[in-house]
Image 1 (tube, rainbow, N blue to C red):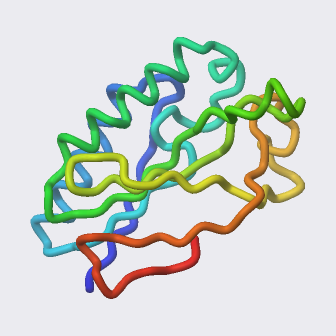
Image 2: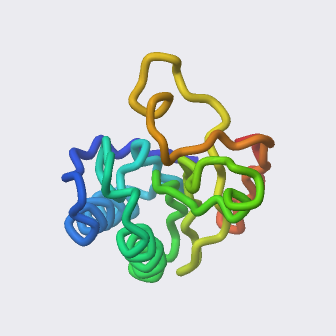
Image 3: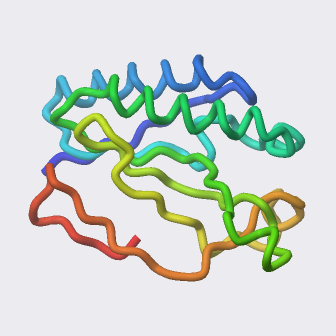
Length: 152
């Protein structure tokens, strides 16, 4: 099985441009017979997104862009994309409103979302008021990769 690691340089806030960079890398990877492509942390919104994550319209646009990217990707390729996911419990629990996440895009859809449970102590992520740590490990299972079911 071939795995590609896409070394991309996303632009902070440029959802369409960043999605295009991911798509171009995915097309190149698929043409080389790759089955799984990895992208950097928060690649869809650019790093560090800072105050952009305080805008609900930006977070909603990110989800829309992610869904469109999933539909546009080569069907034979699974792609892990760095993004954010709303923390639906934040109002009830007082937790931060978003999770630093990775989305599994496969078969034209967002198949799974994984939330990051670890932030290195010296990064922007530990100081932000918007990103909450995930609490549980999740298994990554892929339809395109039937032998792959790994702890993410």
